[in-house]
Image (cartoon, rainbow, N blue to C red; front, side, top):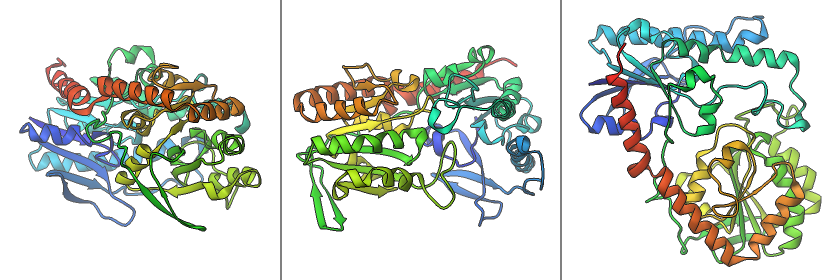
Length: 417
């Protein structure tokens, strides 16, 4: 069977599924966008030919601001469409197309291959109410114009609904954000965590170069961890930083390991010339022992795993939005977790059993919960063991997620037109 994956940054969410289908003997190929310094080309990743497309133009100058995002998706969709035509001319005719539609690339591919079944990755449907938008009053309630823009932003999703044969979403809550008529087509299967690799390790160690010399940390130390792709309000960075003065005062031996870049993945940007990391660090730095707060930036995956293995208490905060992979990995690593009580988190944390939940905005309660847990090693151990068991049971890559994903793909093939 010929199968085409489409993702702006392939493999991304298809990191495991695409190679697994190749290993089963299928002809697997992919379409992704070329980088700014790259030309359209074909290269291989894990034995899979990856066709890089190059958009032929940029956004139209002075275009209406509400439609800039949509025009960008159309430009990418056109480039992917042309790439698909070239692939068809070379003899490639997929029975199945699996796409993350978020960047628009798959909008016109059924015009290239009308008989192909299209499965789309349903990561998030933007909500003007009840989701991330307007959730945090500190950054302003959503304006009526902003709500209008959200509807325009969903046009790409809505166009896909007309011809997509099925959807796949990583969590129930993410699936629930989509319109009810399309929810019937969505199967909930998490991307999967390699729980054989992401494990507790009492022998983990990490040496940091600090302004005061080298610091070597082990699981015997008191370590609070906070991990995100970028340090920003969407992932509760401001709430976490505001909890640190009370935490570090109460726990004089604790160290804080903070992982994340200085860019913005989601939401509003900081004031010009600043980063959210610095904005909220400056807010509290006069109240904390800065020698015990370690900003590690973006780290390699092995270092990330070591950080989780060192963790005494792992803090995770997010707006009602896409659930980060790192959260499930923290569970798999056996971390004792304190998390913000928002719908995507509540889906995977049984409060008091697999982790502890606090109101997202309650800084004082977050600090107290972290301190109480740091003072109770037996409870930390019990929570960590339960979190790992939950991750293995529900999100194990090889035994749970990947078999379900492969079955989903097989179901796509069997669907009637």
